[in-house]
Amino acid sequence: MHPDLSPHLHTEECNVLINLLKECHKNVRIQKSDRNAQVKLSWLSVPREDAEPAEVTGECMHSILKFFGHCNDLDREMRKCLKSEYTEKRTRSREHGAAMRKRLSDLPEEAGR
Image 1 (cartoon, one colour):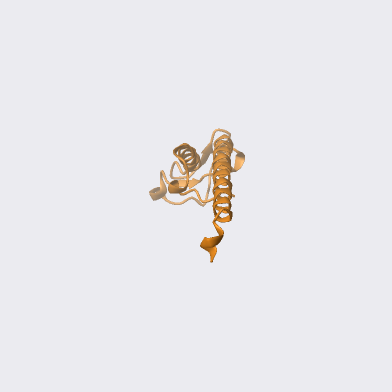
Image 2 (cartoon, rainbow, N blue to C red):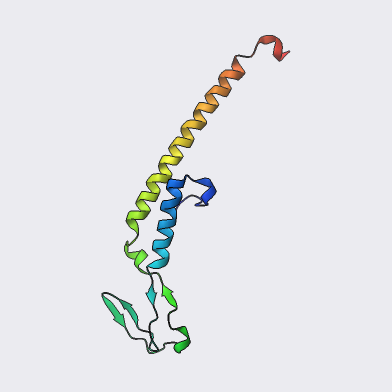
């Protein structure tokens, strides 16, 4: 499961990878191509008897190749980018916390009274 992939939460580099992955999942689809609605892949051609009429021509049926790892390389690159973002954010947060603790512990005694 990925974190929130909203563009405002990530760097431009990660946003590019996120968009490429979304496009990969969207564009790798099986088409209903004709009146008999044959499902066509390079290795699969299955005619369907219960096919819809011609008005569904060109409609996308399902993005099935994503279940067979077609977009895995993009997913790995995106997760790697998100992990580096998380690591940088965690480091900045630790540094900020240490600076705040130091600032609070260095307050003069009179300021507290």
